[in-house]
Length: 152
Image (cartoon, rainbow, N blue to C red; front, side):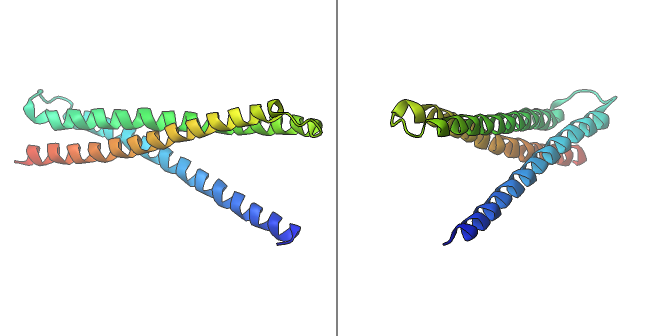
């Protein structure tokens, strides 16, 4: 593979990664908006009604949606942290290019440390994404159970 082909390959790969990240963030924003809307809709539906045992599934739905919002926002915050850390990693790498003649582990150590932090943040971010989805879908399921109980 010549240099031109490699550059084209890495540009395509970067575009795919960037596109995936943008779509994932839009999805997270969408789920957060749906959860907030669902909470508002649930409150509006039950305004003026007396609290009873049939509201337990609805209460669970509200809790699940609240958890989804919380983890969705944490996911977005960690996305920003990872972007910042990647930028810092590039800054460190740029400074290290000045010291190429030095063959010392201390020169490459900061990049490895930042890389380890990024990997740790990315793992947390994955779990936040899963919890966002679980909270949303369990909230929907609880809401449906409540609605069916109200219809009976």
